[in-house]
Amino acid sequence: MPKSKDSTPFDTGYKLLFSNPRMVKDLLEGFIKPEWINELDFDTLEPLKASFATDDLRERHDDSIWRVKMGPDWLYLYLLIEFQSSDDYFMACRIMTYVGLLYQDIIRHEPLRKGQKLPPVLPIVLYSGTRDWTGPINMADLVHRPHPGL
Image (tube, rainbow, N blue to C red; front, side, top):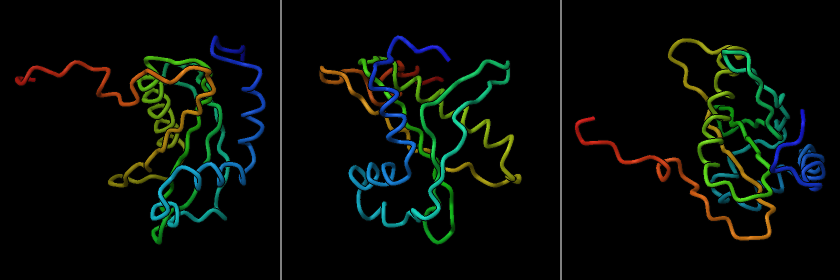
């Protein structure tokens, strides 16, 4: 896949670094609240394929996706890591699209039954730009409030 306009020489290094389960564990332990992180079974941490096709067969390549079992019910938590070297005002929308593609892939390939819920997704954007991030981090901040009648 050709490099995007946001690629930097560091992207390959970040991808290599976060292809190691110990580095992913350290990332989570460094940024997630302890009461939540203690529910994760890091012995089950495993990488997933990071390339999906949309229903109209367009491809989307993610940088790194992992899953880990969580809590006594062994629920799956999918981690999606997006490496970013420039401030992208619409990143929240991009992440929402990636999560939707991940859910479509899970529906196609996991043994889900009617009534089962999809696993939660924790999207992580690793920003390596030199300036402070200014784009919205919540999709709601990108969408006009709907008319009350809607």
